[in-house]
Amino acid sequence: MNTDNLIQNMISAAKLDVNFFNAVEHDESKNQEALMVVIIAAIASALGNGIGGIFSNGIIGGLLGAIYGLVMVVIGYYLWSYLTHFIATKFFEGEGDVGEVLRTFGYSYSPQILAIFAFIPCIGWAIAFAAGIWSMVAGIVAIREAMDFDTGKAILTVAIAWVIMMVIFMILAAVFGIGGLGMGALMGR
Image (cartoon, rainbow, N blue to C red):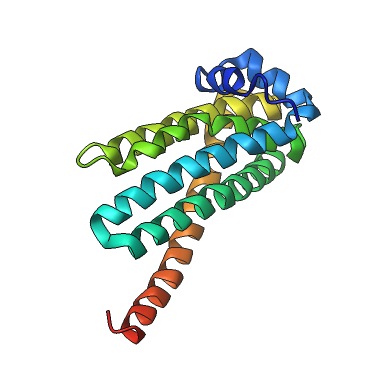
C-alpha cells in the first residue's frame, strides 16, 4: 500500500471533491488506504473519548471510552457501508458494488479525525458533532458517486442507512450499558 498521498487524499475527501470520489470509486488499489482512513479516524475518536473519559470517569472510564470509540467507528464503517449499498441497490436502483461503497465511504470518514478534540470541555462535543455531520455530507457525495445516481437518492440512502445504524447502536448500547451496570454492581461500584 502506497500511502504517500494519504493526507492529500484525505484533504480531497474532506473538501468534498467530486472528482476525487469518482476516481476512488474505480480504483481498487485504494481499498487498504480507505480502510486506513477509517482506522485513523477510529484512533482519533478513541483518543478523544479516552481523554474525555479520564477527565469525567477516571482511568477505567477513559479506557472504556477509548475502546468504545475505536470499536464503534470501525463497526460503524462496515455496517453503514453494507446498509447503504443494500438500500441503494434494492430501493434506489444504484449501480455500484460493495467495494466501491467501502472505498468511497472510507475516505468520507476523513473529517472525523477532528473527534480527537472531543475531550475539550464545553466545545469538544460540538467539534465531534460537526465532524460527524461533515463526514455524513462527505458520505452523501461518496455514495452518489459510487452508486451513480442523483443527490436526492444519495441523501435518502445515507439517511435511511444512518437511522438504521443508530437504532442498532442504541440497542447495543442498551445491552452493553445494562451489562456494565451489572459489572459495576458486582465490583462494588
